[in-house]
Image (cartoon, rainbow, N blue to C red):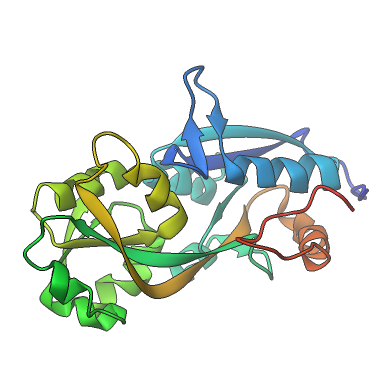
Length: 235
C-alpha cells in the first residue's frame, strides 16, 4: 500500500452527480451510492490507504466545487475544459457506449435508426442536461438544435413529451432509467452506438492531493480490464 512522503489531509473529498444511476445516486438515507462510489472507495481507501468522503450534488455544482477547491476530485470524462482545472488518470476507470434514446411512438423513429454518427443528428432536435461536459465537447460544436434540462431525468422527459427527438447518453445508465415506471414502454434505446465515453479519475489541480496522481496511475495500470472497466479489489 502506498504511503505519502508528506502528510495529506485525512479525507479526500469526492463529489458526484446525484442523479446518475447506477453510477452515483442518493439513496433513501441521503447517502450517495453506485459504481463510481465503489470504484473510488477501492482506489483511494483500499489501494492507497486514503480516507475518502462521498457527496452528491447537481453535476454543474459538483464540478464547480472541484474547480474552486471545495472538493478534491470526481470520476468523469476529461474534456479540454475540465483539464484546465483537473489532472486526469492516464487510463479510464470505466468506458461505456453512448446510445440514442427516443420516444417509442416518435414519428422520427425510423429516421433515427439510420443515424450512425453524431454528425447525423443535425436534422434532429436533441435533448441533454446542463453540466454535461461530454455534450458540451461533442454535441454543441456540431451546431445541433439542443434543448437543455436541469438534469438527466429532465432531459429524458423532453424526449418522452415530444419536445425533442432524441437524447444521446451512456447506455448503461439509460438501461436502468428506462425500466423506471415513468419511462418504461415510453422511451426506447436504439442499437446505434455513436461513440464511447471514457470516465477517468480526476483530481483538482489545486487540491492537496494533486501529487497522488502518479500512484493512481500505477494502480490503474495494473488492474484487470473486463466489461465496463472498473478497479479490481484483489491485488
